[in-house]
Amino acid sequence: MAHGEAQALPWQAPVILEKEAAVSEAEDIGFRRVTLVWITTVLALFAVLGVLGWLMRLTQGRFLTLRPEWFYSLMTLHGLGMFGTWYISTMVGVRYLLTRYARLSLSVSWVVYLITLGAVGLFVVATLVGRFSPGWYFLYPLPFHSQGVWKPWATTMFLTFVALLGVAWVIWEVDVLRAIARRWSLPQALGWDVLFGRRNVSDVPLAVHIATVMLVLHLSALLAAVVLLTLYALEGIGTGLQNDPLLMKNLTFYFGHVTAEVTTNLSFLIVLELMPRLAGRPRFYVNRMFAAAFNVVLVLIAITYLHHLLMDFAQPFWLRILGQTASYLIPIPAAVVTIFVTLSLVYGSRMRWTLPAVLFYLGVMGLAIDGVGAAFISSTPALQFLFHNTLVAVAHLHLGFLMGVVLISLGFAFQFVKELSQTDETPRMTWVVPALLAVGGYGLVLMFSLAGAASVPRRYAIYPEELAQGVTMARWAVVPLVLLTVGVLLYLWELIRRWPRAWAALRPSSAGGS
Image 1: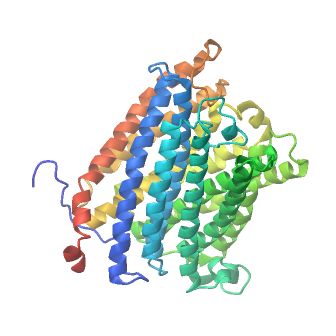
Image 2: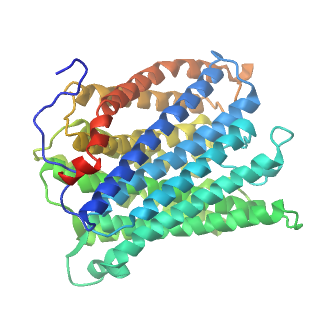
Image 3: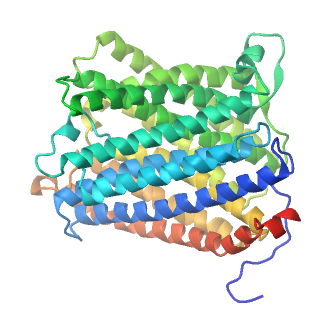
């Protein structure tokens, strides 16, 4: 074996690439190919967007001088780019896993990929060339008031990017629901026959149930985005329409918050589908506990976005009470499902603690900490007054996504490539990579949290002298950032050197014999 080549350790039974599939063998090869292409694209975007995060933190620590208009362009690109990248990543994993149970369309996968590439190109041009930089929330009416920083065409291009991505996501999700509907009725897929009937367990796999609940909910968020973009367009083309800022903010946060929650739950779907296999446990099917938990989550997620508007005094008071109540309630089913089920999977099992298994476990714990702790705190009005516009909000976002969704997505990607290439992981990387990612990631979150606790505001490119704590924390943040970056680079190295064998396994001659 040549130096640097992946070790050919004894091959273990596949976790993702099982023979069970609702699609034909040729279609399965096609789905494997498009999934590998998506994984490669997502990891490339992750690397580039991560570099932008580095540039922003170095600027805030005064290690680097970046003009504010460039900082905010990068902030818009980094924030919204990461947000979309990890939604896409979870959907890629979910779609492949669902081919076990439902006949999804391979053509749709490629069409969505091409639309997404085009949309991302528009986004990059709008931010890096047009310097569109209102932040990743693009809250109304800021996109129409650039103060000369960006041109009107950049706003048009950005909104076109959002519209294209929305079209792609609708096509993707409708295709999943269509395929599920060919095998199960909607009440069955939603678990209502178990929840309100006499059976305790149905024949619907839990992955199908979670996907149905989340995608039905997310289509409502995409509908909100359609209304939002239509209102933007009507005002932008000069019809004389003056939009209501509070309505626009509600639409924006309904779309954004629901998408974030759907992303975290879809990443948890991946764990619940793969962890039993790694632990030597049977597959999960819908029972009353799961049906009750995810149907309650379906309702609560649709309401909890309102905690983003607790500071808006013009919002009807009863809506704020409703949002507050839902925000307090949602950690309960989330905690029961995420923590209890994951711990019960591991306890007393013959868990294969591979690199993906460790990343799955850490990812679930990250989601649990964020869902039960950070999200609960951030939705408390008294604390909102203190921390709403500080870096605590940034810490919350990085905790949920970086230490939850990202780790689970990295686990899926590595397991997928490992199985395709049929090369097991390097044993020392099983713990070195997760340790670096965990220490670096939580260290980064800690620096954001400490700065927020010291009232350092978010969205500041350059901290004035009165906010010297912000500079200090940004400088200390370099230490965990280095650890995190080393962990990511080691991960990528382990994956990239398996990539040629993985791709070769999908060539017609190789695939035909697999």
